[in-house]
Length: 228
Image (cartoon, helix red, strand yellow):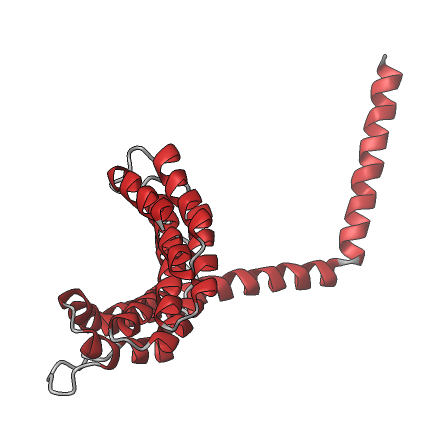
């Protein structure tokens, strides 16, 4: 038993000795590696603390006035800012996108700019900014897709609109956006003279979304499509 313990201790001492030799032999490389890791960690911390966070703050300040105009329905001022204002932060969404496009406020500005252009009847520009938006929340990407469809309808591109509405309906199967997107697709199918596809969309809303605000209207739209 004592011999086994002795042998084990000898093995441990030998392993420790080899480890020490390895560390001693590669000391410079190990130190360089540790320093490199520290530099990376400190750089990430520094970027976040001294660059990213202040930039986010500046973006939030810059977008404040534009979002006030947006909320009031003054879409032109929201886009371009208010040159008559003495507020140094009274810049438009387009300026926020240009300067702070990678920040959360900048990304939000792209979505809001798309809505502004849509409401102002500038449909190509609306699609351009909706395409730039890449939201990570649950609902705005769905609305973004639907509004692309709205812009395409206004441009007379009904088939493209149907693709956007159909995609939006599948993006998040909830009782608000999914039936609304299906209903929009159904209406455009009617515009195209494809009554069978229109009825299919309306039936989908009726059968699968009884809690939807549109549910009670579907029988009327189905009857209308069947009568055409």
